[in-house]
Length: 294
Image 1 (cartoon, rainbow, N blue to C red):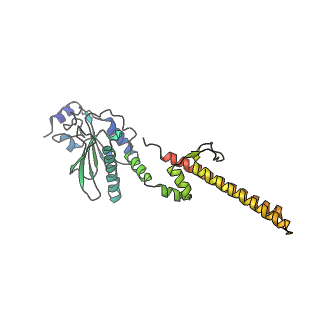
Image 2: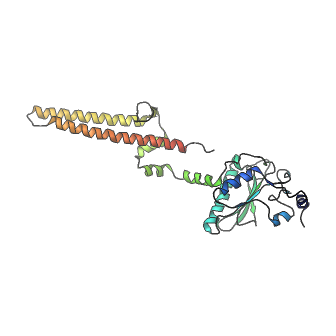
Image 3: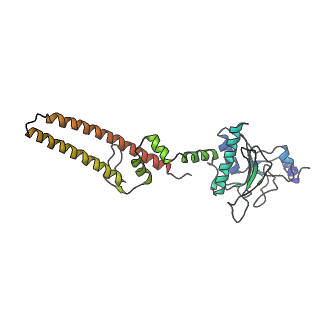
């Protein structure tokens, strides 16, 4: 027999409003091509007691649900295959991680039901008034999709507007692409990469063509200064050697040797500039990856 809430709803003309955070999550998931249901089917409508798909739910928490406002979603697998089921389970896992962490965008969630890749269906609940991020797990028979139910006090919560669990999943995957992977992918010397990644005392004096003059790691300034000093010392040694040979009656073309050395030095300067530009690009990339996630 249908509940009194159902009869009142029918008499009122079946008014229906999905609460704001549920509507936002539905919109953001549908943007990825997923099917997300919210409106109650006949079984939901006539259930006793009526639950959160209905706009007359009798299972509100932490207080009674406002009438004519529904607060539940069913996130369906993209496809009825292993890949679709895995993605569906991963969406649930991301919601659980974020809800456990107290992420504001998902604090409206009261509980969710989900099914893992082995077909095990569980309900995860956050209904401890004293510890809002404490989760309890129980068995569920609501399998084959992710069901999300909202709290009674979150009807107009706007913090979920930009929340997208699929994008969140991809962010975590990117974080798994570690510093060593990035270094190898860019073919950067280990010492230089570690200096950039780990940070070091800064010093002025390193100029990168086309880049603002900023402080950079002192180890890098010192290393390049050392290389430049070695180059100058090498050229001086060759000049002394050539002078000695000529003084001893040898026939050495001093101008040709020094000209060739200057060519090599110019090539080294060009390579150094390429390296410095690569360092600047890596610094910018690293700074971008360290920006806080909204």
